Length: 241
Image 1: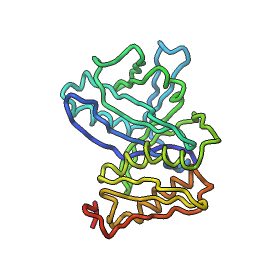
Image 2: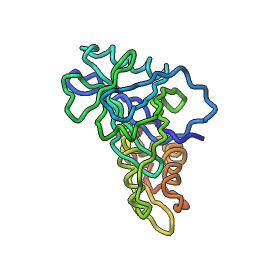
Image 3: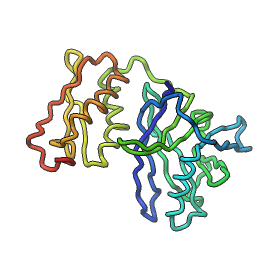
Image 4: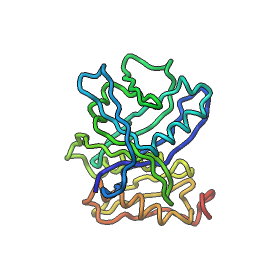
């Protein structure tokens, strides 16, 4: 299996703000999947050649997002890494404007669009492949990156789980108005509480078992059980009833 990241696309067409078009979460992708033709990005201003590959599907989606902007000719795709954990980096994709770039940015010209990232991210993204996938659970970008972040092995289970909730799980749940919080860890059990659109939601069990609990076990294998202490009967605004 290749360790990759993926996330649901979140669209906002506000004219005066960057458009967030993807928040990535750690999800594996089968190594045997067929990868479409890829495009190679190079920038002569970078001492070490930076290779970032975009599949045809990813390119098609990015172009579709760009075409919705008021000034598509002035629009670039910005790639950022807001956080990292034991499983890898977490990514965000924005549509940004050429006029707003800074001296800290590096611009890469692709055949059909431009990509911008901060210079400090060049080493972290070198050799990465960006794909667009669609499934029953949602659609979004998947990033296969051979580079791994340096994570402190002495981090506590509580710290690791809190970081994953803050940077990965809750941004995804926010699209449904939901949230999860870690109440405590006791006897190798993680007690969590769902709120907002997740409280009383008919899909909360699946969200907990196949999303939250699975992710906790990946970054904190020492946790033997995840316990939901949510009072789902009192949920006032569940996303699914």
